[in-house]
Image 1 (cartoon, helix red, strand yellow):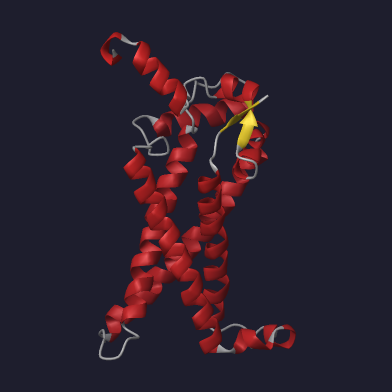
Image 2: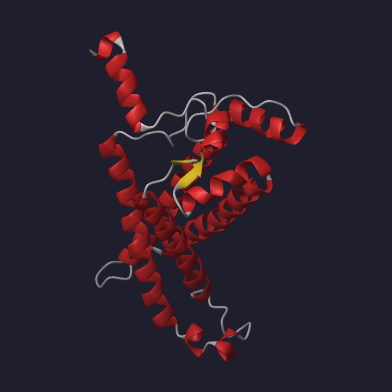
Length: 223
């Protein structure tokens, strides 16, 4: 038996952001340039075409920015803040990691583990840096728009820093699945569902929208 953890919309947005982010990293690296230097043009001549890779970079950026904004707006409008960090998440994350390493008992979790909420916040901060610096770099390419050289230099440095931090966060995100208990979360990003027994055991504080409405209706204050 399984329970629904991620809706189709959430999965589409998740994979859309992930794939467009990979595209941004790849085309961004080709802007440096490295294609000719490391012989990539032998296999893919188009990789050395600056204006082509720039167009692809802008295309991936448009998809990436749209989906990031959509994610925030939709969850805000629905009042769905399960992924937003809560007080004590850092301490709980340490306890969960300790329990996974020692085989001890984990503290009960909501729909998302404390470390998942912290990781989400880190991605939001880094993506905001990438988007802000990327938009400014795009703006300065428009006719009649210019920025002083020191500003351009730091924009480039901060944008590259955002790319590096994104790569490191992705590695950390994948490394979380080295822990066996976390692997049961993987199906949720494909089918949207997780094992019901796993959810009850590891996420006992998780309440679906239907359960939350039912509990509210049954409570004295909800009548």
